[in-house]
Image (cartoon, rainbow, N blue to C red; front, side, top):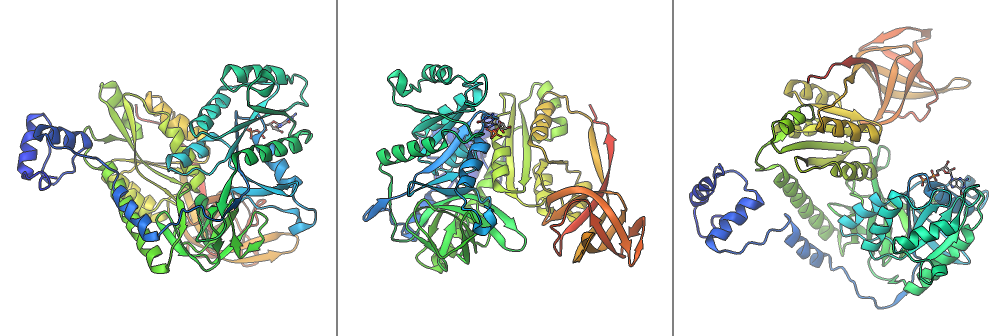
Length: 578
Ligand code: GDP
Protein backbone atom coordinates (compact mmCIF):
# COMPACT_ATOMS: atom_id res chain seq x y z
CA UNK A 1 0.00 0.00 0.00
CA UNK A 2 2.84 2.38 0.86
CA UNK A 3 4.36 2.01 -2.58
CA UNK A 4 1.04 2.64 -4.28
CA UNK A 5 0.68 5.90 -2.38
CA UNK A 6 4.27 6.96 -2.90
CA UNK A 7 5.01 6.75 0.79
CA UNK A 8 7.19 4.47 2.89
CA UNK A 9 5.88 1.81 5.21
CA UNK A 10 7.35 3.83 8.06
CA UNK A 11 5.14 6.79 7.08
CA UNK A 12 2.09 4.64 7.48
CA UNK A 13 3.22 3.17 10.79
CA UNK A 14 3.97 6.67 12.13
CA UNK A 15 0.67 8.07 10.99
CA UNK A 16 -1.36 5.22 12.46
CA UNK A 17 0.57 5.50 15.72
CA UNK A 18 -0.52 9.13 15.96
CA UNK A 19 -4.07 7.90 15.56
CA UNK A 20 -3.54 5.49 18.42
CA UNK A 21 -3.19 2.35 16.30
CA UNK A 22 -0.12 0.21 16.94
CA UNK A 23 0.95 -1.55 13.78
CA UNK A 24 4.19 -2.88 12.42
CA UNK A 25 5.37 -2.74 8.83
CA UNK A 26 4.80 -6.43 8.26
CA UNK A 27 1.27 -6.52 9.57
CA UNK A 28 -1.91 -6.52 7.53
CA UNK A 29 -3.96 -3.35 7.86
CA UNK A 30 -7.66 -3.29 8.48
CA UNK A 31 -9.89 -1.61 5.91
CA UNK A 32 -10.51 1.21 8.39
CA UNK A 33 -6.80 1.92 8.78
CA UNK A 34 -6.30 1.95 5.03
CA UNK A 35 -9.13 4.40 4.58
CA UNK A 36 -7.86 6.57 7.40
CA UNK A 37 -4.42 6.89 5.89
CA UNK A 38 -5.74 7.40 2.36
CA UNK A 39 -8.05 10.15 3.59
CA UNK A 40 -5.07 11.86 5.22
CA UNK A 41 -3.37 12.01 1.83
CA UNK A 42 -6.52 12.84 -0.03
CA UNK A 43 -6.09 9.65 -2.01
CA UNK A 44 -9.01 7.63 -3.18
CA UNK A 45 -9.14 3.93 -2.34
CA UNK A 46 -11.47 1.31 -3.56
CA UNK A 47 -11.60 -1.72 -1.33
CA UNK A 48 -12.48 -4.91 -3.15
CA UNK A 49 -12.74 -8.50 -2.13
CA UNK A 50 -9.49 -10.32 -2.84
CA UNK A 51 -9.84 -11.75 -6.31
CA UNK A 52 -12.89 -9.72 -7.34
CA UNK A 53 -11.08 -8.00 -10.19
CA UNK A 54 -9.32 -11.18 -11.22
CA UNK A 55 -12.70 -12.87 -11.37
CA UNK A 56 -13.79 -10.59 -14.20
CA UNK A 57 -10.70 -11.61 -16.10
CA UNK A 58 -11.40 -15.27 -15.42
CA UNK A 59 -14.88 -14.98 -16.81
CA UNK A 60 -13.38 -13.47 -19.93
CA UNK A 61 -10.94 -16.38 -20.18
CA UNK A 62 -13.83 -18.82 -19.90
CA UNK A 63 -15.56 -17.00 -22.76
CA UNK A 64 -18.92 -17.48 -21.11
CA UNK A 65 -21.43 -16.98 -23.85
CA UNK A 66 -24.52 -15.20 -22.57
CA UNK A 67 -26.22 -14.44 -25.85
CA UNK A 68 -29.85 -15.49 -25.83
CA UNK A 69 -29.94 -16.43 -29.47
CA UNK A 70 -31.92 -19.57 -30.13
CA UNK A 71 -33.49 -19.46 -26.67
CA UNK A 72 -36.23 -21.97 -26.05
CA UNK A 73 -38.87 -22.39 -23.39
CA UNK A 74 -37.37 -24.09 -20.35
CA UNK A 75 -39.00 -25.65 -17.27
CA UNK A 76 -39.51 -23.34 -14.27
CA UNK A 77 -37.32 -23.86 -11.20
CA UNK A 78 -39.30 -23.80 -7.98
CA UNK A 79 -38.24 -23.38 -4.35
CA UNK A 80 -40.65 -24.22 -1.55
CA UNK A 81 -40.54 -21.97 1.51
CA UNK A 82 -42.62 -21.38 4.62
CA UNK A 83 -42.83 -21.70 8.37
CA UNK A 84 -41.55 -24.84 10.04
CA UNK A 85 -44.08 -27.69 10.20
CA UNK A 86 -46.40 -26.10 7.67
CA UNK A 87 -45.79 -29.04 5.33
CA UNK A 88 -42.96 -28.14 2.94
CA UNK A 89 -41.24 -31.52 3.19
CA UNK A 90 -44.42 -33.54 2.82
CA UNK A 91 -45.46 -31.48 -0.20
CA UNK A 92 -42.10 -32.00 -1.89
CA UNK A 93 -42.24 -35.72 -1.14
CA UNK A 94 -45.76 -36.01 -2.48
CA UNK A 95 -44.97 -34.26 -5.74
CA UNK A 96 -41.86 -36.33 -6.16
CA UNK A 97 -43.42 -39.71 -5.45
CA UNK A 98 -46.58 -39.10 -7.46
CA UNK A 99 -44.33 -38.73 -10.43
CA UNK A 100 -42.45 -41.97 -10.02
CA UNK A 101 -43.90 -44.53 -12.34
CA UNK A 102 -44.35 -47.71 -10.42
CA UNK A 103 -41.69 -50.30 -11.09
CA UNK A 104 -39.30 -47.73 -12.44
CA UNK A 105 -35.94 -48.23 -10.74
CA UNK A 106 -37.94 -49.92 -8.00
CA UNK A 107 -39.83 -46.68 -7.51
CA UNK A 108 -36.88 -45.34 -5.58
CA UNK A 109 -35.83 -41.76 -6.05
CA UNK A 110 -32.52 -40.37 -4.93
CA UNK A 111 -32.09 -37.23 -2.91
CA UNK A 112 -29.75 -35.19 -5.02
CA UNK A 113 -31.03 -31.79 -3.90
CA UNK A 114 -33.48 -31.21 -6.71
CA UNK A 115 -35.80 -33.15 -8.96
CA UNK A 116 -38.08 -32.79 -11.93
CA UNK A 117 -41.72 -33.68 -12.20
CA UNK A 118 -44.02 -33.68 -15.19
CA UNK A 119 -47.50 -32.18 -15.35
CA UNK A 120 -49.53 -32.16 -18.57
CA UNK A 121 -46.39 -32.79 -20.61
CA UNK A 122 -44.57 -29.88 -19.03
CA UNK A 123 -41.64 -30.33 -16.73
CA UNK A 124 -41.14 -28.48 -13.45
CA UNK A 125 -37.90 -28.49 -11.47
CA UNK A 126 -38.14 -28.45 -7.68
CA UNK A 127 -35.22 -27.61 -5.48
CA UNK A 128 -35.78 -29.90 -2.55
CA UNK A 129 -33.82 -28.21 0.17
CA UNK A 130 -36.73 -26.22 1.47
CA UNK A 131 -36.25 -23.07 3.46
CA UNK A 132 -35.20 -19.54 2.85
CA UNK A 133 -31.79 -20.04 4.41
CA UNK A 134 -30.50 -22.05 1.47
CA UNK A 135 -32.27 -19.69 -0.90
CA UNK A 136 -30.66 -16.65 0.67
CA UNK A 137 -27.24 -18.26 1.05
CA UNK A 138 -27.27 -18.84 -2.70
CA UNK A 139 -28.37 -15.35 -3.43
CA UNK A 140 -25.56 -14.06 -1.25
CA UNK A 141 -23.20 -15.73 -3.72
CA UNK A 142 -24.92 -13.97 -6.57
CA UNK A 143 -26.66 -17.14 -7.67
CA UNK A 144 -30.31 -17.01 -8.51
CA UNK A 145 -31.66 -20.46 -9.12
CA UNK A 146 -35.33 -19.92 -8.46
CA UNK A 147 -38.01 -18.72 -10.87
CA UNK A 148 -41.03 -19.28 -8.66
CA UNK A 149 -41.41 -19.51 -4.88
CA UNK A 150 -44.17 -21.69 -3.47
CA UNK A 151 -44.98 -20.32 -0.04
CA UNK A 152 -46.54 -22.99 2.13
CA UNK A 153 -48.89 -21.68 4.83
CA UNK A 154 -50.79 -24.10 7.07
CA UNK A 155 -54.48 -23.25 6.93
CA UNK A 156 -54.95 -24.03 10.62
CA UNK A 157 -51.97 -21.96 11.74
CA UNK A 158 -51.83 -18.99 9.41
CA UNK A 159 -49.00 -16.59 8.64
CA UNK A 160 -46.16 -17.13 11.12
CA UNK A 161 -42.76 -15.46 11.63
CA UNK A 162 -40.92 -17.64 9.10
CA UNK A 163 -43.76 -17.14 6.60
CA UNK A 164 -43.12 -13.42 6.85
CA UNK A 165 -39.38 -13.93 6.50
CA UNK A 166 -39.88 -16.08 3.43
CA UNK A 167 -42.07 -13.38 1.88
CA UNK A 168 -39.32 -10.82 2.49
CA UNK A 169 -36.68 -13.03 0.93
CA UNK A 170 -38.75 -13.88 -2.13
CA UNK A 171 -39.68 -10.23 -2.65
CA UNK A 172 -36.09 -9.09 -2.19
CA UNK A 173 -35.12 -11.51 -4.93
CA UNK A 174 -38.02 -10.32 -7.07
CA UNK A 175 -39.33 -13.85 -7.54
CA UNK A 176 -43.08 -14.43 -8.03
CA UNK A 177 -44.84 -16.15 -5.14
CA UNK A 178 -47.63 -18.70 -5.26
CA UNK A 179 -49.21 -19.41 -1.91
CA UNK A 180 -50.09 -23.02 -1.11
CA UNK A 181 -52.64 -22.94 1.69
CA UNK A 182 -51.86 -26.37 3.11
CA UNK A 183 -53.51 -28.70 5.63
CA UNK A 184 -57.01 -27.93 4.36
CA UNK A 185 -58.00 -31.36 5.69
CA UNK A 186 -57.45 -30.15 9.25
CA UNK A 187 -60.48 -29.24 11.37
CA UNK A 188 -59.32 -25.68 12.12
CA UNK A 189 -58.44 -24.90 8.49
CA UNK A 190 -59.50 -21.47 7.33
CA UNK A 191 -58.21 -20.38 3.92
CA UNK A 192 -59.89 -16.99 4.10
CA UNK A 193 -58.17 -16.10 7.32
CA UNK A 194 -54.84 -16.93 5.67
CA UNK A 195 -55.72 -14.76 2.66
CA UNK A 196 -56.57 -11.85 4.96
CA UNK A 197 -53.25 -12.24 6.77
CA UNK A 198 -51.40 -12.33 3.46
CA UNK A 199 -53.15 -9.18 2.32
CA UNK A 200 -51.99 -7.47 5.51
CA UNK A 201 -48.43 -8.38 4.53
CA UNK A 202 -48.81 -6.83 1.11
CA UNK A 203 -49.37 -10.13 -0.69
CA UNK A 204 -52.87 -9.39 -1.94
CA UNK A 205 -54.72 -12.53 -3.10
CA UNK A 206 -56.76 -12.55 -6.29
CA UNK A 207 -60.00 -12.82 -4.35
CA UNK A 208 -59.08 -9.50 -2.72
CA UNK A 209 -58.48 -7.87 -6.07
CA UNK A 210 -54.74 -8.49 -5.97
CA UNK A 211 -52.50 -10.68 -8.06
CA UNK A 212 -51.28 -13.33 -5.70
CA UNK A 213 -52.45 -16.83 -6.53
CA UNK A 214 -53.52 -18.92 -3.56
CA UNK A 215 -54.18 -22.63 -3.82
CA UNK A 216 -55.97 -24.42 -0.97
CA UNK A 217 -54.56 -27.93 -0.71
CA UNK A 218 -53.53 -30.81 1.48
CA UNK A 219 -50.18 -32.50 1.22
CA UNK A 220 -51.69 -35.24 3.36
CA UNK A 221 -54.63 -36.18 1.14
CA UNK A 222 -53.10 -34.93 -2.11
CA UNK A 223 -56.06 -32.63 -2.77
CA UNK A 224 -55.11 -29.46 -4.65
CA UNK A 225 -51.59 -30.54 -5.61
CA UNK A 226 -52.41 -30.81 -9.32
CA UNK A 227 -53.99 -27.38 -9.17
CA UNK A 228 -50.80 -26.05 -7.57
CA UNK A 229 -48.69 -27.54 -10.36
CA UNK A 230 -51.00 -26.01 -12.96
CA UNK A 231 -50.64 -22.61 -11.34
CA UNK A 232 -46.85 -22.95 -11.34
CA UNK A 233 -46.96 -23.68 -15.07
CA UNK A 234 -49.23 -20.70 -15.59
CA UNK A 235 -46.88 -18.34 -13.78
CA UNK A 236 -43.95 -19.83 -15.69
CA UNK A 237 -45.71 -19.13 -18.95
CA UNK A 238 -46.32 -15.51 -17.97
CA UNK A 239 -42.68 -15.16 -16.99
CA UNK A 240 -41.64 -16.43 -20.42
CA UNK A 241 -38.76 -18.45 -19.07
CA UNK A 242 -36.35 -19.28 -21.82
CA UNK A 243 -32.73 -20.32 -22.27
CA UNK A 244 -30.62 -21.45 -25.18
CA UNK A 245 -30.15 -25.23 -25.21
CA UNK A 246 -27.10 -25.09 -27.42
CA UNK A 247 -23.67 -23.93 -26.41
CA UNK A 248 -21.48 -24.64 -23.42
CA UNK A 249 -23.42 -25.13 -20.22
CA UNK A 250 -23.61 -22.56 -17.42
CA UNK A 251 -25.41 -23.08 -14.14
CA UNK A 252 -25.05 -23.31 -10.40
CA UNK A 253 -24.03 -25.83 -7.80
CA UNK A 254 -26.97 -26.78 -5.58
CA UNK A 255 -25.23 -29.25 -3.29
CA UNK A 256 -21.84 -30.89 -3.03
CA UNK A 257 -20.19 -33.47 -0.86
CA UNK A 258 -17.39 -35.98 -0.80
CA UNK A 259 -18.34 -39.57 -1.42
CA UNK A 260 -15.77 -42.11 -0.41
CA UNK A 261 -16.22 -44.37 -3.37
CA UNK A 262 -17.03 -41.81 -6.00
CA UNK A 263 -15.02 -38.78 -4.94
CA UNK A 264 -16.42 -35.25 -5.02
CA UNK A 265 -20.08 -35.27 -6.02
CA UNK A 266 -22.00 -32.15 -7.01
CA UNK A 267 -25.63 -31.60 -7.85
CA UNK A 268 -25.78 -28.84 -10.39
CA UNK A 269 -28.62 -27.04 -12.04
CA UNK A 270 -27.99 -26.34 -15.69
CA UNK A 271 -29.30 -22.86 -16.44
CA UNK A 272 -28.32 -22.51 -20.08
CA UNK A 273 -26.64 -24.58 -22.75
CA UNK A 274 -26.19 -28.33 -22.49
CA UNK A 275 -23.81 -30.15 -20.19
CA UNK A 276 -22.25 -33.30 -21.63
CA UNK A 277 -20.11 -36.14 -20.41
CA UNK A 278 -16.40 -35.58 -21.04
CA UNK A 279 -16.59 -31.79 -20.95
CA UNK A 280 -14.17 -29.81 -18.77
CA UNK A 281 -16.15 -27.87 -16.18
CA UNK A 282 -15.18 -25.32 -13.55
CA UNK A 283 -17.34 -24.87 -10.46
CA UNK A 284 -15.97 -22.13 -8.26
CA UNK A 285 -12.45 -23.27 -7.38
CA UNK A 286 -13.07 -26.89 -8.40
CA UNK A 287 -12.65 -28.31 -11.85
CA UNK A 288 -12.63 -31.59 -13.73
CA UNK A 289 -13.94 -33.48 -16.68
CA UNK A 290 -17.52 -34.66 -16.33
CA UNK A 291 -17.10 -38.39 -15.76
CA UNK A 292 -20.70 -39.37 -15.18
CA UNK A 293 -24.09 -37.73 -14.75
CA UNK A 294 -27.25 -39.08 -13.18
CA UNK A 295 -30.74 -37.70 -12.75
CA UNK A 296 -32.86 -37.71 -9.58
CA UNK A 297 -33.82 -41.34 -10.18
CA UNK A 298 -30.22 -42.42 -10.42
CA UNK A 299 -30.53 -42.95 -14.18
CA UNK A 300 -27.35 -42.24 -16.14
CA UNK A 301 -27.47 -39.30 -18.53
CA UNK A 302 -25.14 -38.31 -21.31
CA UNK A 303 -26.35 -34.73 -21.48
CA UNK A 304 -28.46 -32.26 -19.51
CA UNK A 305 -30.17 -29.14 -20.83
CA UNK A 306 -31.61 -25.99 -19.22
CA UNK A 307 -33.39 -26.31 -15.83
CA UNK A 308 -32.21 -29.88 -15.47
CA UNK A 309 -30.73 -30.86 -12.09
CA UNK A 310 -28.05 -33.52 -12.35
CA UNK A 311 -25.56 -35.18 -10.10
CA UNK A 312 -22.11 -34.82 -11.58
CA UNK A 313 -18.98 -36.85 -10.95
CA UNK A 314 -15.54 -35.81 -12.04
CA UNK A 315 -14.72 -32.60 -10.19
CA UNK A 316 -11.39 -32.70 -8.41
CA UNK A 317 -12.66 -31.02 -5.25
CA UNK A 318 -15.87 -30.46 -3.39
CA UNK A 319 -17.53 -27.40 -4.89
CA UNK A 320 -19.52 -24.96 -2.75
CA UNK A 321 -23.27 -24.68 -3.01
CA UNK A 322 -24.17 -21.48 -4.79
CA UNK A 323 -21.01 -21.51 -6.87
CA UNK A 324 -21.39 -20.79 -10.54
CA UNK A 325 -20.32 -23.57 -12.87
CA UNK A 326 -19.23 -23.13 -16.44
CA UNK A 327 -18.05 -25.53 -19.11
CA UNK A 328 -14.64 -24.24 -20.17
CA UNK A 329 -13.42 -24.00 -23.75
CA UNK A 330 -10.66 -26.47 -22.87
CA UNK A 331 -9.14 -28.35 -19.99
CA UNK A 332 -6.20 -26.01 -19.61
CA UNK A 333 -8.40 -22.96 -19.13
CA UNK A 334 -10.55 -24.87 -16.65
CA UNK A 335 -7.51 -25.81 -14.56
CA UNK A 336 -6.09 -22.31 -14.64
CA UNK A 337 -9.33 -20.63 -13.65
CA UNK A 338 -9.87 -23.03 -10.74
CA UNK A 339 -6.32 -22.54 -9.53
CA UNK A 340 -6.56 -18.76 -9.64
CA UNK A 341 -9.84 -18.82 -7.77
CA UNK A 342 -8.42 -21.10 -5.14
CA UNK A 343 -5.53 -18.73 -4.62
CA UNK A 344 -7.85 -15.77 -4.11
CA UNK A 345 -10.19 -17.68 -1.87
CA UNK A 346 -7.24 -18.53 0.33
CA UNK A 347 -6.15 -14.90 0.36
CA UNK A 348 -9.64 -13.85 1.30
CA UNK A 349 -9.80 -16.25 4.20
CA UNK A 350 -6.38 -15.12 5.41
CA UNK A 351 -7.42 -11.47 5.11
CA UNK A 352 -10.35 -12.33 7.34
CA UNK A 353 -8.04 -13.28 10.18
CA UNK A 354 -5.27 -10.77 9.71
CA UNK A 355 -5.01 -7.51 11.60
CA UNK A 356 -8.20 -7.09 13.52
CA UNK A 357 -7.80 -5.19 16.72
CA UNK A 358 -8.88 -6.69 19.98
CA UNK A 359 -7.90 -10.21 19.01
CA UNK A 360 -10.08 -13.23 19.16
CA UNK A 361 -11.52 -15.14 22.04
CA UNK A 362 -12.51 -18.70 22.53
CA UNK A 363 -15.98 -19.86 23.21
CA UNK A 364 -15.09 -20.59 26.82
CA UNK A 365 -13.94 -17.12 27.68
CA UNK A 366 -15.87 -14.94 25.32
CA UNK A 367 -18.14 -13.83 28.13
CA UNK A 368 -15.24 -12.53 30.20
CA UNK A 369 -14.42 -10.11 27.46
CA UNK A 370 -18.01 -9.07 27.08
CA UNK A 371 -18.26 -8.46 30.82
CA UNK A 372 -15.10 -6.42 30.78
CA UNK A 373 -16.93 -4.14 28.39
CA UNK A 374 -14.72 -5.07 25.46
CA UNK A 375 -15.97 -5.84 22.06
CA UNK A 376 -15.24 -9.51 21.73
CA UNK A 377 -14.73 -11.42 18.55
CA UNK A 378 -15.38 -15.11 18.55
CA UNK A 379 -13.11 -16.74 16.01
CA UNK A 380 -14.43 -19.97 14.58
CA UNK A 381 -13.15 -22.73 12.39
CA UNK A 382 -16.27 -24.46 11.15
CA UNK A 383 -16.36 -27.90 9.58
CA UNK A 384 -19.48 -29.75 8.49
CA UNK A 385 -20.43 -32.92 6.65
CA UNK A 386 -22.01 -31.33 3.58
CA UNK A 387 -22.21 -27.88 2.07
CA UNK A 388 -25.88 -27.54 2.81
CA UNK A 389 -25.36 -27.90 6.54
CA UNK A 390 -22.25 -25.71 6.44
CA UNK A 391 -24.30 -22.88 4.96
CA UNK A 392 -27.19 -23.44 7.33
CA UNK A 393 -24.93 -23.44 10.41
CA UNK A 394 -23.11 -20.34 9.19
CA UNK A 395 -26.32 -18.46 8.60
CA UNK A 396 -27.73 -19.40 11.98
CA UNK A 397 -24.50 -18.38 13.72
CA UNK A 398 -24.41 -15.08 11.87
CA UNK A 399 -27.80 -14.26 13.32
CA UNK A 400 -26.36 -14.47 16.84
CA UNK A 401 -23.98 -11.58 16.24
CA UNK A 402 -24.48 -8.63 18.51
CA UNK A 403 -23.04 -5.20 18.94
CA UNK A 404 -20.60 -6.46 21.57
CA UNK A 405 -19.91 -9.95 20.25
CA UNK A 406 -18.79 -10.40 16.68
CA UNK A 407 -18.19 -13.66 14.90
CA UNK A 408 -15.35 -14.25 12.54
CA UNK A 409 -15.02 -17.39 10.46
CA UNK A 410 -11.36 -18.13 10.18
CA UNK A 411 -12.21 -20.94 7.83
CA UNK A 412 -15.21 -22.96 6.85
CA UNK A 413 -15.14 -26.26 5.05
CA UNK A 414 -16.64 -29.63 4.35
CA UNK A 415 -15.09 -32.81 5.73
CA UNK A 416 -13.50 -34.21 8.87
CA UNK A 417 -11.44 -32.02 11.19
CA UNK A 418 -7.78 -32.42 10.29
CA UNK A 419 -4.50 -31.22 11.68
CA UNK A 420 -4.55 -28.24 9.36
CA UNK A 421 -7.78 -27.01 10.89
CA UNK A 422 -6.28 -27.31 14.35
CA UNK A 423 -3.12 -25.44 13.37
CA UNK A 424 -5.19 -22.71 11.84
CA UNK A 425 -7.35 -22.48 14.95
CA UNK A 426 -4.27 -22.38 17.18
CA UNK A 427 -2.73 -19.60 15.10
CA UNK A 428 -5.85 -17.48 15.17
CA UNK A 429 -7.10 -18.30 18.65
CA UNK A 430 -10.19 -19.88 17.25
CA UNK A 431 -12.59 -22.48 18.52
CA UNK A 432 -13.25 -25.37 16.18
CA UNK A 433 -16.85 -26.30 15.67
CA UNK A 434 -17.61 -29.59 13.98
CA UNK A 435 -21.08 -30.42 12.74
CA UNK A 436 -21.54 -34.13 12.01
CA UNK A 437 -17.80 -34.51 11.61
CA UNK A 438 -14.96 -35.70 13.83
CA UNK A 439 -11.31 -34.86 14.28
CA UNK A 440 -8.90 -37.53 13.10
CA UNK A 441 -6.25 -38.79 15.49
CA UNK A 442 -3.57 -36.30 14.49
CA UNK A 443 -6.02 -33.46 14.83
CA UNK A 444 -7.05 -34.68 18.26
CA UNK A 445 -3.47 -34.89 19.46
CA UNK A 446 -2.53 -31.49 18.08
CA UNK A 447 -5.63 -29.96 19.65
CA UNK A 448 -4.51 -31.30 22.99
CA UNK A 449 -0.94 -30.06 22.78
CA UNK A 450 -1.94 -26.71 21.30
CA UNK A 451 -4.86 -26.38 23.71
CA UNK A 452 -7.39 -25.76 20.98
CA UNK A 453 -11.03 -26.07 21.91
CA UNK A 454 -12.88 -28.50 19.66
CA UNK A 455 -16.63 -28.70 19.98
CA UNK A 456 -18.59 -31.34 18.14
CA UNK A 457 -22.29 -31.32 17.42
CA UNK A 458 -24.82 -33.44 15.66
CA UNK A 459 -27.83 -31.25 16.33
CA UNK A 460 -27.84 -27.74 14.96
CA UNK A 461 -30.01 -26.49 17.80
CA UNK A 462 -27.43 -27.63 20.39
CA UNK A 463 -24.68 -25.91 18.48
CA UNK A 464 -26.53 -22.62 18.26
CA UNK A 465 -27.67 -22.67 21.86
CA UNK A 466 -24.13 -23.39 23.08
CA UNK A 467 -22.72 -20.43 21.22
CA UNK A 468 -25.60 -18.29 22.39
CA UNK A 469 -25.10 -19.37 25.99
CA UNK A 470 -21.38 -18.73 25.78
CA UNK A 471 -22.18 -15.20 24.77
CA UNK A 472 -24.14 -14.61 27.94
CA UNK A 473 -21.77 -16.60 30.12
CA UNK A 474 -24.06 -19.53 30.66
CA UNK A 475 -22.21 -22.35 29.04
CA UNK A 476 -23.54 -25.57 30.54
CA UNK A 477 -21.28 -28.29 31.79
CA UNK A 478 -20.32 -30.39 28.90
CA UNK A 479 -20.18 -34.08 28.40
CA UNK A 480 -16.77 -34.95 27.24
CA UNK A 481 -16.61 -37.94 25.03
CA UNK A 482 -13.52 -40.01 25.58
CA UNK A 483 -12.44 -42.10 22.67
CA UNK A 484 -11.68 -45.59 23.93
CA UNK A 485 -10.80 -47.41 20.77
CA UNK A 486 -10.47 -47.12 17.08
CA UNK A 487 -10.76 -49.95 14.61
CA UNK A 488 -10.42 -49.85 10.89
CA UNK A 489 -12.64 -51.91 8.64
CA UNK A 490 -10.48 -54.15 6.43
CA UNK A 491 -13.08 -56.46 4.99
CA UNK A 492 -16.82 -56.90 5.16
CA UNK A 493 -18.34 -60.34 5.70
CA UNK A 494 -21.98 -61.02 4.98
CA UNK A 495 -23.19 -63.78 7.25
CA UNK A 496 -26.72 -65.01 6.70
CA UNK A 497 -28.94 -64.54 9.71
CA UNK A 498 -26.45 -62.16 11.29
CA UNK A 499 -26.00 -59.48 8.68
CA UNK A 500 -22.76 -57.82 7.74
CA UNK A 501 -19.80 -58.09 10.07
CA UNK A 502 -16.83 -55.79 9.82
CA UNK A 503 -13.50 -57.56 9.80
CA UNK A 504 -11.33 -55.02 11.59
CA UNK A 505 -7.95 -54.33 13.02
CA UNK A 506 -7.99 -52.42 16.29
CA UNK A 507 -5.58 -49.58 15.71
CA UNK A 508 -5.72 -47.81 19.05
CA UNK A 509 -7.00 -48.49 22.53
CA UNK A 510 -9.47 -51.29 22.74
CA UNK A 511 -12.92 -52.17 21.51
CA UNK A 512 -15.41 -53.57 24.00
CA UNK A 513 -18.59 -55.46 23.37
CA UNK A 514 -21.59 -53.16 23.81
CA UNK A 515 -19.49 -50.00 23.55
CA UNK A 516 -20.96 -46.85 22.06
CA UNK A 517 -19.89 -46.37 18.46
CA UNK A 518 -19.45 -43.59 16.04
CA UNK A 519 -19.07 -44.88 12.53
CA UNK A 520 -16.82 -42.67 10.43
CA UNK A 521 -16.19 -42.41 6.74
CA UNK A 522 -13.60 -39.81 5.80
CA UNK A 523 -13.96 -38.16 9.18
CA UNK A 524 -17.69 -37.76 8.75
CA UNK A 525 -20.09 -39.44 11.15
CA UNK A 526 -22.44 -41.54 9.14
CA UNK A 527 -23.97 -43.59 11.90
CA UNK A 528 -24.09 -43.85 15.70
CA UNK A 529 -24.96 -46.88 17.75
CA UNK A 530 -23.28 -49.70 19.59
CA UNK A 531 -21.12 -52.77 19.12
CA UNK A 532 -23.67 -55.57 19.03
CA UNK A 533 -21.27 -58.47 18.58
CA UNK A 534 -17.53 -58.82 19.00
CA UNK A 535 -15.51 -61.80 17.92
CA UNK A 536 -11.90 -62.77 17.91
CA UNK A 537 -11.53 -65.60 15.43
CA UNK A 538 -14.46 -67.91 16.24
CA UNK A 539 -14.98 -66.79 19.82
CA UNK A 540 -17.27 -64.17 21.25
CA UNK A 541 -15.09 -61.90 23.37
CA UNK A 542 -15.64 -58.97 25.71
CA UNK A 543 -12.71 -56.89 24.59
CA UNK A 544 -10.14 -56.73 21.83
CA UNK A 545 -7.10 -54.54 22.17
CA UNK A 546 -4.80 -52.68 19.81
CA UNK A 547 -3.01 -54.66 17.15
CA UNK A 548 -5.52 -57.48 17.14
CA UNK A 549 -7.99 -58.50 14.51
CA UNK A 550 -11.65 -58.87 15.29
CA UNK A 551 -15.10 -59.11 13.77
CA UNK A 552 -17.47 -56.31 14.78
CA UNK A 553 -21.21 -56.47 14.28
CA UNK A 554 -23.17 -53.25 14.65
CA UNK A 555 -26.75 -52.81 15.78
CA UNK A 556 -28.99 -52.03 12.78
CA UNK A 557 -26.27 -50.71 10.51
CA UNK A 558 -25.12 -52.46 7.40
CA UNK A 559 -23.58 -49.90 5.07
CA UNK A 560 -20.07 -51.06 5.90
CA UNK A 561 -17.20 -50.31 3.59
CA UNK A 562 -13.53 -51.09 3.58
CA UNK A 563 -11.50 -48.27 5.10
CA UNK A 564 -14.29 -47.04 7.38
CA UNK A 565 -13.41 -46.35 10.99
CA UNK A 566 -15.28 -47.59 14.01
CA UNK A 567 -14.65 -45.32 16.96
CA UNK A 568 -15.82 -46.41 20.40
CA UNK A 569 -16.25 -43.95 23.24
CA UNK A 570 -17.55 -43.27 26.74
CA UNK A 571 -18.95 -40.07 28.17
CA UNK A 572 -17.87 -38.09 31.19
CA UNK A 573 -19.24 -34.83 32.47
CA UNK A 574 -16.71 -32.06 32.71
CA UNK A 575 -17.29 -28.95 34.71
CA UNK A 576 -16.96 -25.64 32.94
CA UNK A 577 -14.67 -23.06 34.39
CA UNK A 578 -16.57 -19.90 35.16
P1 GDP B 1 -42.00 -28.60 7.13
O1 GDP B 1 -41.32 -28.32 8.43
O2 GDP B 1 -42.64 -27.38 6.55
O3 GDP B 1 -41.16 -29.33 6.13
O4 GDP B 1 -43.26 -29.54 7.48
P2 GDP B 1 -43.44 -31.11 7.26
O5 GDP B 1 -43.67 -31.42 5.81
O6 GDP B 1 -42.39 -31.83 7.97
O7 GDP B 1 -44.86 -31.29 7.96
C1 GDP B 1 -45.03 -31.08 9.34
C2 GDP B 1 -46.13 -31.98 9.87
O8 GDP B 1 -47.38 -31.62 9.30
C3 GDP B 1 -45.90 -33.43 9.52
O9 GDP B 1 -46.30 -34.22 10.62
C4 GDP B 1 -46.80 -33.66 8.34
O10 GDP B 1 -47.23 -35.00 8.25
C5 GDP B 1 -47.96 -32.74 8.65
N1 GDP B 1 -48.62 -32.25 7.44
C6 GDP B 1 -48.06 -31.71 6.34
N2 GDP B 1 -48.99 -31.39 5.44
C7 GDP B 1 -50.18 -31.75 5.95
C8 GDP B 1 -51.54 -31.68 5.49
O11 GDP B 1 -51.85 -31.21 4.39
N3 GDP B 1 -52.50 -32.12 6.35
C9 GDP B 1 -52.22 -32.63 7.56
N4 GDP B 1 -53.22 -33.05 8.33
N5 GDP B 1 -50.95 -32.72 8.03
C10 GDP B 1 -49.94 -32.29 7.25
